[in-house]
Image (cartoon, rainbow, N blue to C red; front, side):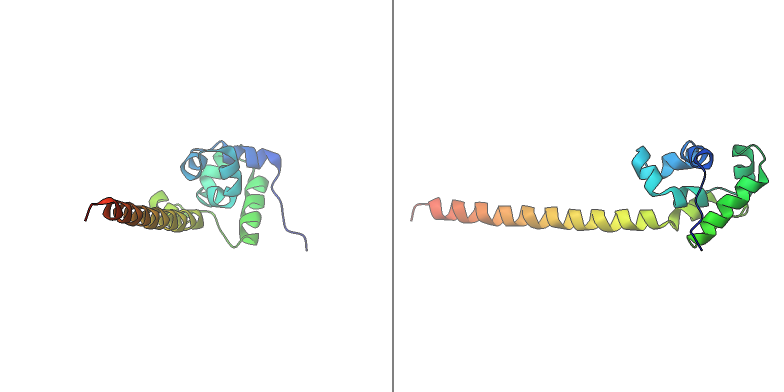
Length: 123
């Protein structure tokens, strides 16, 4: 069975939502994390965004299900839903690695400078 896809109308609606701006700054980031953006919406929010078209909302639910995700429940806060998203975990891991690399490079540069200074001192 082929994986379901979303019509352009739904993708455009999701990308233009406020949640898309929370997930990514650029259009390419937002498209990369479209599953996360869709999963932040509740069923009622999607119904309002898609003009009360229940068939389109069912299509989004089916698409999310194929990715192992679901719409946010009305009782779930947006904060708790955002904390559980995978894209945040990936960014945190990347930033930690980058920060560690910069610290190590700074320490190495300091050692080289210290050795250079020590070798230039008169004896």
